[in-house]
Length: 356
Ligand code: ADP
Ligand code: MG
Image 1 (tube, helix red, strand yellow):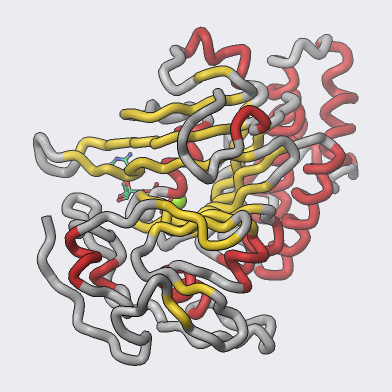
Image 2 (tube, helix red, strand yellow; image 1 turned 180 degrees about the horizontal axis):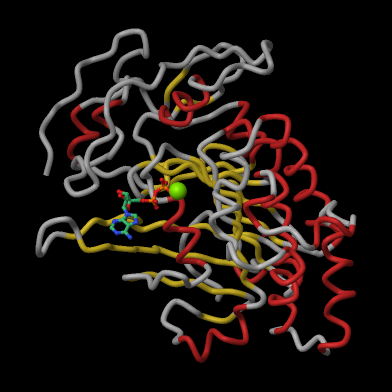
C-alpha cells in the first residue's frame, strides 16, 4: 500500500499500516456519536515496537482494538502484511486471527475463571493445528518460556495466580497461537512496580525470540519509553506527535507531549527541560474544541489554534508533530517555538472556551 501521501508513513515495508482511522461509538443520547478515534495514521515495521501514549479516554484502546479488528472502523484503512483488513468480515479475518493477538490490562479478568492454566494454553494451541497428543507438551514449553515452567502452575485456576503470573499465562496463551503482531493494552498498569519491570523484560525477550511486532498502549510514559522504538502521542482521538522514541522523549515538540512528560516523575534528573504542567480537564469527546483540540489546555495557544486544525508536519528527522507552535531544539533548556512564538510558556493565556 504505497503512496499513502501521509508524510510519516513508511510505505510498503510496514507490517501494520493505519491511515486516517476513524472509530465512532454511539453516544449516551440517541443520535449522538463519540468519535473515539478521529483520523489516526501510523505504521509499524516488522520487529518494531510502537508505543501509544496519552491520557485516559484519548482513544488508545480503541485504536489497538481496531487494528486487530476487534472493533470495526468507521472509516480509514488498515493494512496488515500488505492485506487491507479494515472492512474484512469475520470469515476473511479468521486466517489472520492467530497472527493478531492482544494482551489486556486486567490479566485475571481476561482468562476464563473455570479453566486451569494448562487448559487455557492448550485451548489456544487447538486452533494452531498442533496434534492433540502434542498439545500438553507444547503448552508446557510455552509456559516455560513465560517463566511458569514449574509443574505446579499448570493446575492452578486464574484466581489462584498473582497478577503477574496471570499476565504471564495470558502472554503464553497469545504466544501459543504463533502471533506476528501483539497489541499490549496497558499490560502492566495493574501490577506492582517490581512486577512491571519483570513483565516488560519478558515481553522484550519474547519479542526477539518470537519475531514479534508490538503495539504497546500505556498511559505511563516511563513504561512506554522503556520498550518503544517509536511513540505515538494521542489527545482526544487525534495524533499530536509521532516519532522516534528517543526524539519524542528527549526533545518533545508538541506542548501536550511536554506537559505529559512533565507530569512523570523524573527518573533522569539531567533531562530537566522546563515545560508547562498539565492542568485543566480534558474536553468531552462529544464536543471537541475547534481547530487544535489541545488548545483549551495549551500554554502556547493563540487565535489561529481555534481557527485552524494543525496538520502533521516534520520537525526533525523521524519526528512529526501536529501543532502551530511546535517546540524545536528543546532538551537543552532552550524553549523555542517555530515558526514564531505567539507567547512564551511562562505567560499562559486563559484558553478560549468556545467550542464547536
Ligand atoms: P483510552 O484507552 O485512551 O483510555 P478509549 O479508546 O478506551 O481510550 O476510549 C476513547 C473514547 O471512546 C472515550 O471517550 C470512551 O469513553 C469512548 N468509548 C470507548 N469504548 C466505548 C464504547 N464501547 N462505547 C461508547 N464509547 C466508548
Ligand atoms: Mg484504554
